[in-house]
Amino acid sequence: MEYSSQLEAKSAELARTARKLREANEKLTQISLQKDAFLGQISHELRTPMTSIRAFSEILRDEDNLTEGEKVRYAGIIHDEALRLTRLLNDLLDLSVLESGQVTLNMRTGLISEVLDRAVSAALAGAEGSLLVRRRQGTEAIRLTSDFDRLAQVFINLISNAQKYCNAPQPELVISVHDVGGQVVVDFIDNGGGVPVEVQSTVFEKFFRVNAEKAGGAGLGLAISKEIMQRLGGDIVYLPGHTGGAFRVSLPLEEAQVGQG
Ligand code: ADP
View 1 (tube, rainbow, N blue to C red):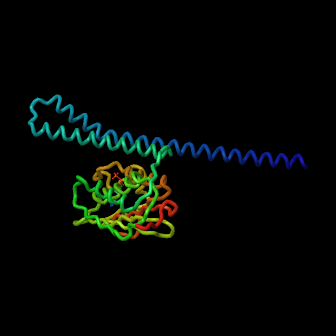
View 2: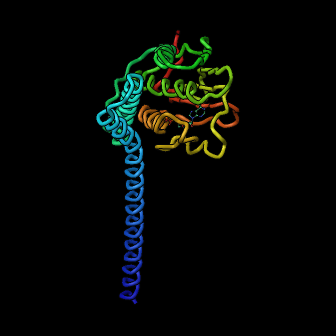
View 3: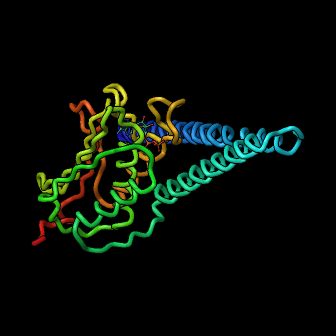
């Protein structure tokens, strides 16, 4: 009797181990498929600028009858595509450093308005378009301890996105800071068409673009922003219920305190 119950216990244990092995195997297959898909997307994104650099440099090399205007235009295309490649490679490198958890944070304490000032100037400097940025200055007297460069990087990305994707005749972005339920939140709400409801949850995925043909970027900006905010102990989410593009950046109160201004 005792022998048979021991046997039963052993076989239950074996069944448990087999199930765990099967689950681990499924997880590995899933990770490997995700990796393949990621590599596929990277090669696709690299191929497009590479193809045009090759084609236009061959024309410049082989065609004898090009006008000066054509030469300048083709050289300009090569230059722009090389810049696009550099941006893409920098983004991929940044993402892989952030995802590996090997990122060094330079924490310091200061006002949130300082980070926003920097981000607004950097995003608007030399950029095309006429985005009007409105700030609720009164709400910005919050001191926080964070990596200001990384936080500014997230803010710059959101302001540049409003500039690129806000399709209102007079594009406007409202930035407001609040202290909500133990968190400091910074909302970025523009008056454009926003992200369609059905893809609001996918917008932070790598390489996601609503309108891939029209978008200039590779769809990595928000994926990078998400990684940064998680490393900083906070988060970034899409705010549903707005007509325009609406993003909320949050940091826990341990990282932020309402200050004297
Ligand atoms: P990229 O780095 O290529 O600009 P992002 O990851 O920053 O890509 O953004 C992903 C996609 O989300 C964009 O291609 C765009 O379709 C959409 N998006 C981002 N911000 C806005 C916004 N403010 N309004 C409308 N669509 C937006």
